[in-house]
Amino acid sequence: MSETAHAPYATDGTDFKGALSYYYRSALTRFAKLGLPSAALFVQMFAWPMDYRGYFLPLAIVGMIGFLVAFFLVYGRLFLTWRCARAFRTYPLEFRAPVEKVKLERPLRLHLRLGARAGKVGQSVTLLAKDPLGRSRWPEGIANGVWFAGDEPFGGAAIVPGSGELLFMQPTEWAMSAKERESAGEVRIGQAKRAGIKRAVRYR
Image 1 (cartoon, rainbow, N blue to C red):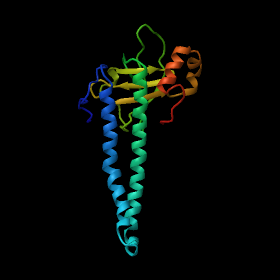
Image 2 (cartoon, rainbow, N blue to C red; image 1 turned 60 degrees about the vertical axis):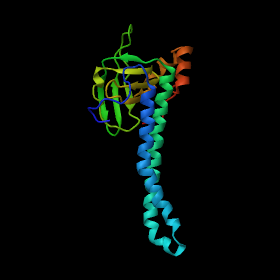
Image 3 (cartoon, helix red, strand yellow; image 1 turned 135 degrees about the vertical axis):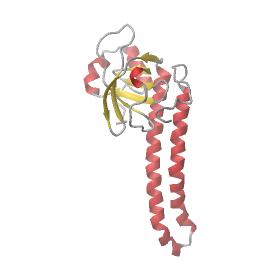
Image 4 (cartoon, rainbow, N blue to C red; image 1 turned 90 degrees about the horizontal axis):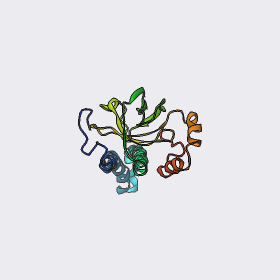
């Protein structure tokens, strides 16, 4: 998706499955573009007689490195998309606006605060958010609000209306939210456990 393009799936909070499918598909497509040619470079060395393999060793090394890079990238992208999926399947989507842009920290980190929930007052938790596909910029229109599924002291996932970026997020200062998590009650703690955000997730 370009910065000005609209997502090829619903971003109005009615269906998160299209966003997840797009992200899974995009991650695997990116892997195929780098990982498969790299694997071919590595494997081709073994197609030659033993006496000739030394000539192709540099290409095989390049292929092995390229495949490992592609593998770790696709693993991280699929992992974060799966984390978003767990949040979406546990919590209802609710529109939170406005979104305060606290800090853009390169690479790949957004620090933000969500607008207050309906009927709730008080300062929002600062959240560290990442796009599973690794885009390192503020999504277009994010200041106008996002569709959020989660519980801020634990984290959650969001879809940006229009541009459609997925964001996985947890409190920037995890330890500072400990008291609020501990006093959240059994229902909220149980939801966080089902969503996989009861504990800090290593995605930073």
